[in-house]
Length: 285
Image 1 (cartoon, rainbow, N blue to C red):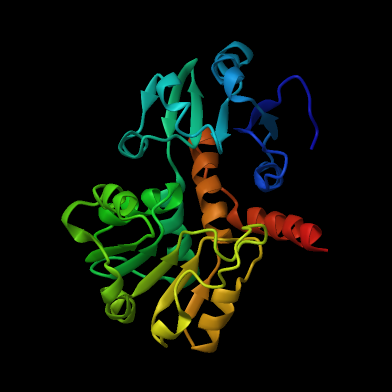
Image 2 (image 1 turned 135 degrees about the horizontal axis):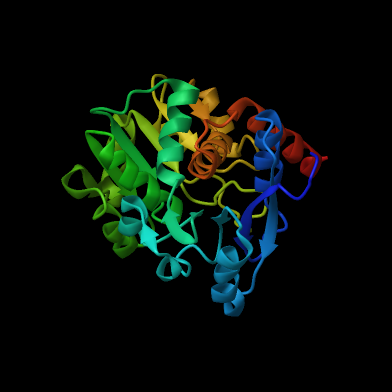
């Protein structure tokens, strides 16, 4: 990339953030689109967050991705908030529109785009089982409720967190008690692992977020983990002939949403995926 006085700057803010794949993914997108933009990482401590956000205005930075632990903390620092970010209480994408900072949440809709791309599944009327109720799960639950699904069932170790999450979806969502898990799993069109179980550095000895033998051929599963590209749970489901996808597509498509918010153009997702795979391969070597 040729950087000059006209280069437009965007980036990701978080702490830690040096491990992020986003610079590789978004810079690949800008290269493919032949745009004079560059994306970098800004590791920012919490006590400096407000100063950093003001720096967006002062320096004319076009926008930022926001990652942990700042997604909720940047919320009150925005001038405008999208409907999804308002409902979720978190922002993962900032657009600097004439020094007016607009906060968005692209996770849930990025998930819907990922599922459509990978499997072609039409969500209308489908039964979805979500394992977990953290930030990613909440975003997905909200977006699924807007996509016309028939039911969203949520399993979580902490019942209160699950009940808080299903409030985002209204009457189509319900909490699954332990004695109903087998029945709900068997009926699900789509099951989503939104927990860290199976992640390379999760620090847990638990092998599966939910037993693979509860599922069978004809069902679809998505594990939001993208490193490793295939988790033990995914491999076990494949052995049962379940159609399975990892979390890389969600990572790509939520970034593609940010790309469009910043530039007004559709993102070159194939180039973004290729760059992400290259970086993950380097990490695992």
